[in-house]
Length: 128
Image (spheres, helix red, strand yellow):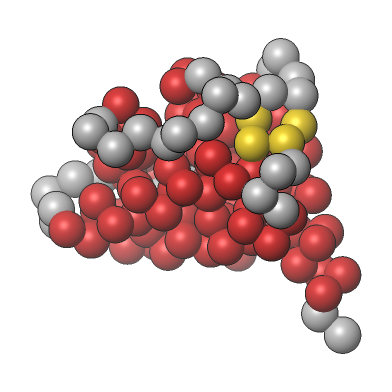
């Protein structure tokens, strides 16, 4: 199970960390955001689930905006500045879904895809 608010918090923290430490890549910033000194106060998902869903959501968003193949895109393949921007945008999209909303699933890849798709759908529904 993963909470939209929890994943949004982790992505916002990772983007802030990348902004504050220019030597970190997206993977290191995401790791620090999850296992660092200010973890998300959430009981819905574990740390590995947070990492897997957050990383895949950033990958999906980046591949969507660059029109690249999602299967070939990894977090390490995304340029640092683009990863920071993608993390902020995915966090914004996830916050629009709602603070109490969450999805359940065992496969993190499929869970991230469903969460990202739902967040994109909410965004598209809000645009006139």
